[in-house]
Image (tube, rainbow, N blue to C red):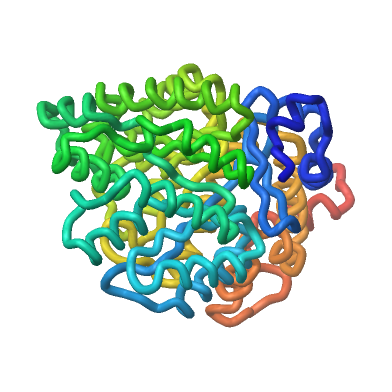
Length: 430
């Protein structure tokens, strides 16, 4: 199998790099050099789709899918996949925890036109509990066998919580954190370490993980098991201690030719976002940074796609490369298809705002086009250039269209119509 990082280190421009170069209007040599340095990763999907994530490319968006123990509707998840891709998510992740996890994952991988990620520790732990009744019976063999199974099924990137250790467990027990551990994978591993007294296998046997990644050119997304779950816990010693370990592991993976993403917080007040991004980028040698949000306040259940988008826009400006959407259902329920749509659009807006702030090539082109169409009151062109044309049309027609020239907000007193008409009128001298 062609290993993207190794080819880049050799100075070879791969087909995937050329395709990404054409799509993003960034020189292929620049992308390849960034891949070689570990600052950009290439996700492959069924050898027909390539997605680049990194410092010289536009910010990408991920949409989470998957069943829960309480709601198992595979067709529903596939509908969410279709909606997320219609709205141009760049990747999806299968986070299923209910039903036949192998079948669900394989159906999502086969149906998806974009790269798919997963969190194999979920399946390893869930199957162990179902078969043997306790997390304590989980083995390193089971964890690594499950990771390889996911890679074999066509998963492009996996979240692996490698940076939490027995040392962190002792720190956690003494910590004044308000929300403890909010990472599901992190909670599984901490519980296993507490029950067995053994070290985290993903940290202790990182070499085995490297070998699996090499075999499948699997991108390792080094998970943030100690990410802050509320703004009060942001940028604390637990979070930073994990980042320090991830930096060392990422450096080793880079030397071995394995592509790595670093996952980050979480819940972070807006004034700490730049600091958080800079800390991770400095410690992890500018590896691509994948953020869940961050959410800038904790008071908005039902609206956390908004609190997340605010943080993600700032984080994108600061240098984050990859944004995981948050839906209105976050903290409350498994997201509906409408929640998925709202989450993807909010994250895409945030990513676009970040690209503009970073002055990425072509980032403002769509803004300029829709602005020109808006001044002309060209509704069809505005619909085409809007981030969600379906929503544009629905809202535009919701009250009935009383005029093809203006909208119902200002009607005949539309400022742009008044000025446009004025500019067309010959100047009269008195």
